[in-house]
Amino acid sequence: IVDKYIGDSVMAFWTQPFSPSDREQAEDACRSALAHFRSAMALREELPEILGIRRNVPKFTIRMGLATGDVVVGTVGSAIAKSYTVIGDTVNLASRLEGINKIYGTRILIDEKTHALANETIEARELDQVIVAGKTEPIRIYQLMAAKGALDETHRKLWDAFALGLE
Image (cartoon, rainbow, N blue to C red; front, side, top):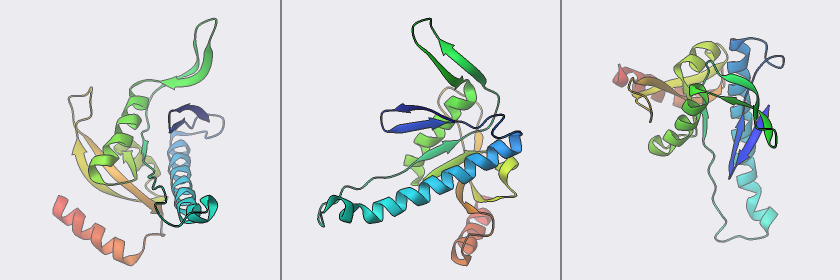
């Protein structure tokens, strides 16, 4: 469900009946993030042609944060303005993860719960433990890169070396 547009951001969430279980919600979110990223990169390649310019083509980046957990889902607001949305710590965590991408130079970060639920269908590497704004305990973050089996051998070797160093 595309919830809202916030400036140049899009907020979306996966819930029943579209994604019946926590596992399917996490997998659907990861698949959607990867598809969105591929589409944005394809658009970036076509931008000079679309805009009709060759020099000083605007650069844009895509950053996403995915978190899985309990939220309040429903119609929120007043008698004048209402919207069907989600609120809660998990929503805030996803927003924090999106911002943390800037620090790591990554594009898609997921939390530990999303990783655990979607791990059989995605390629992701553990990146770090961080304490996000508003929290006191660290969380593990993972970089989402590809669907299961789609990671090339070069990246696989680099990730294995990184994992060994992280360990």
